[in-house]
Length: 194
Ligand code: SF4
Image (cartoon, rainbow, N blue to C red; front, side, top):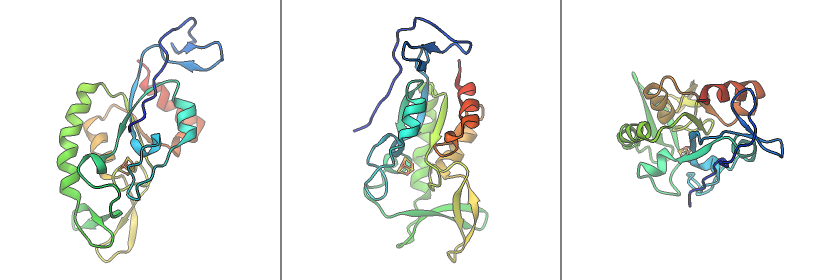
């Protein structure tokens, strides 16, 4: 079951950013701002091991401000839950997403779905992305990249996060770990404001 969190609609006072200020002191947006977010961070059991990575800090800090739009590129593109874990592999000029044990190439399955999903997201009015750090699909800054022989050769962006960043170049894309930094979080918020 997908979890959905949204902002209350009533607003009695606003601060200098246009946020509504609740009696409890928690600010929230007067209109819902849709943020596409890795579903596992919202508590959905979509990970390769059938579990989730609910991020309480993310929910508590940004939950009152946004409407979460859960997305799991791997599960939604047709991969099973649970599934064999994957990693990014550099194959000549291309980066492929390959299962670690049986070496199945899942790249085309993921990217075919991605092309359609991004078009749909444009119509949905998505205003930003928050993705799971280090995932081969969702990682924003630090997904490990391997050579064909299995050696770690660097870090890069995950395949879905990369495609989303190219398709929506003006929208912020960040991971849950970076958003624990107050300065990064403030800049992310500034970019999703109407
Ligand atoms: S990191 Fe992305 S692809 Fe992996 S389980 Fe979470 S939402 Fe799905």
